[in-house]
Amino acid sequence: MKQKVVGQVISQKEIAPMIFDMWIDTTLAGEAQPGQFICVYPKDKSTLLPRPISICEVREDRKALRIVYRVAGAGTKEFSAYQAGESIAVMGPLGNGFPVKAGEAKKAFLIGGGIGVPPMLELAKQLERVGCQVQSVMGYRNQDTFLKQDLEQYGPVYVASEDGSAGTRGNVMDAIRENALEADVIFACGPLPMLRAIKTYAEEKKIPAYISLEERMACGVGACLGCVAKTKNVDVHSHVHNARICTDGPVFLAEEVEI
Amino acid sequence: MNLQTEIAGVVYKNPVMTASGTFGSGMEYSEFVDLNKLGAVVTKGVANVPWPGNPTPRVAEVYGGMLNAIGLQNPGIDVFMERDIPFLKQYDTGIIVNVCGKSVEDYVEVVERLGEEPAVSMLEINVSCPNVKEGAIAFGQKADALYNITNTLKKHAKQPIMMKLSPNVTDITEMARAAEAGGADALSLINTITGMKIDIHRRKFVLANKTGGMSGPAIKPIAVRMVYQTAQAVKLPIVGMGGIATAEDAIEFILAGASAVSVGAMNFINPYCTEEILKGIEDYMRMYRVENLKDLVGAVHE
Ligand SMILES: Cc1cc2nc3c(=O)[nH]c(=O)nc-3n(C[C@H](O)[C@H](O)[C@H](O)COP(=O)(O)OP(=O)(O)OC[C@H]3O[C@@H](n4cnc5c(N)ncnc54)[C@H](O)[C@@H]3O)c2cc1C
Ligand SMILES: Cc1cc2nc3c(=O)[nH]c(=O)nc-3n(C[C@H](O)[C@H](O)[C@H](O)COP(=O)(O)O)c2cc1C
Ligand code: FES
Image (tube, rainbow over all chains, first blue to last red; front, side, top):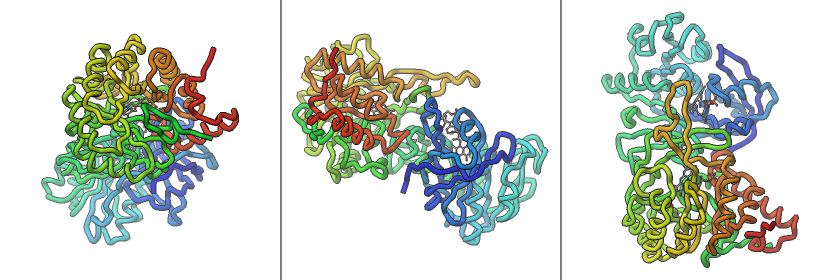
């Protein structure tokens, strides 16, 4: 069940310039699934709307969540100053999450680009448990390859960086080609150009690709219709070619959305 | 203590309602709020056919509130009657349906369909959405157009009609009088105030629609003023809204002349706020030994 609660920061550290890694003690961890997200509410009343942040990891005892985020503006700047013990208002778990079952006994690409890397961690953990062969392909700006070591626990990690300072110079697709990698299914989160390239690649290879989309949100629970994505078919809820990213997504089968 | 309020002959168990478009048809927020506790659920605007709405980004944060340009995306009246109304009927709450259209004929069609459903206690007619090009607000910004549509809909409506007024006018009382003359049973106000936000780094409009309707705490003083002026100008009952975040805010609207209040954008920030506002109104009545909510309506004095 979705809830809005006040959690407590357990720890926070800057793991790369402007990238923060926070563990939160919260009951929302109880049912959280990989690919789902939480809404975090700034305390400053000039920033009223919730900030959607992906669930990066769920602690084994299901009593704490990890988020990894980039300081992008006022809200994330405020969060980055929180110390251990600070209260933090969160709502969740939100969205549908990645279908872990689709990776059962398969060879998968987990593709993350930039701040799309974090949700891949819990997914990698869960996929490994269902006998999925996890191959992570992560795209970064430079050599600040945050979460790479965490991901390595579950399978090989191939890196691409825009400036060539780590792994393949270029993007995640370049890394896939350079390492001659293959997969039966794709799970991805990252910037739109990356997701578009993945959609095309998956169509060519005739494999399913589950992609996580982003949009500006107000309610986070499917009520305001602020966060829609264009769909190929008429959506069952909206009865138009629009699905709510916060509720029907954020994860969609690439062939079902027009991006 | 009696929290009941009456609007155009319909009794609602308390004055706390949800603002159209911020609460869907109650389904999504029923995980957070006991809908049985609400005076009424006012649903998202519904048209005769499905509307796709505007391109994204549709929402933006601004100081003290937000802008939206959803463009009245809705599944159309057929789906609404088959899915949303039966859902709401499971609860002991008032059902007020917000109606939108591009032409008078569109509105008439929806109003007539809703006439088949006795569980719908009132129709809120949205003639004030700033985010669609045709229809909608065109009816709400000219007194004669508002008079005409009110007059026509009144002839076709089985339920009382509540005209939702736009604040994007020079004189709100002129519009209120036009609706009253046209035969409106009640008024609701305010809809959002047209605004704009520019991303200075990209030098682009933040919303795909360029303009959007502003709502949230920052618009409350404007809304309270307009509710007061309207209450002075016409005899119709008023549902007040615009920036309500707390019970204190809601009570301001009631003292200004609103018989009930709707809570909008604040649901996004605190999904439990409607229940909290109701409790706060009860506390206020207890503190000042007010027996009947009705005694507070318009009770502000010089
Ligand atoms: C489902 C989902 C999952 C996300 N997961 C992560 C994550 O794990 N790590 C991470 O660093 N970022 C993530 N983001 C992006 C994150 O939501 C934004 O970076 C954040 O909201 C910026 O807030 P701000 O106050 O710092 O920026 P500001 O620019 O001050 O924000 C102003 C407004 O715009 C909204 N906004 C700004 N950028 C975005 C964006 N990219 N997407 C949606 N809304 C935005 C804010 O929520 C706020 O309402 C995710 C976004 C979505 C939709
Ligand atoms: C996301 C959003 C969608 C809305 N959709 C509608 C609508 O469909 N019909 C309508 O009459 N008003 C709509 N409104 C206006 C609200 O009902 C209300 O009049 C306005 O937001 C002011 O109240 P608030 O400040 O409490 O949000 C919408 C407002 C928001 C924020
Ligand atoms: S953010 Fe409101 S519907 Fe998705």
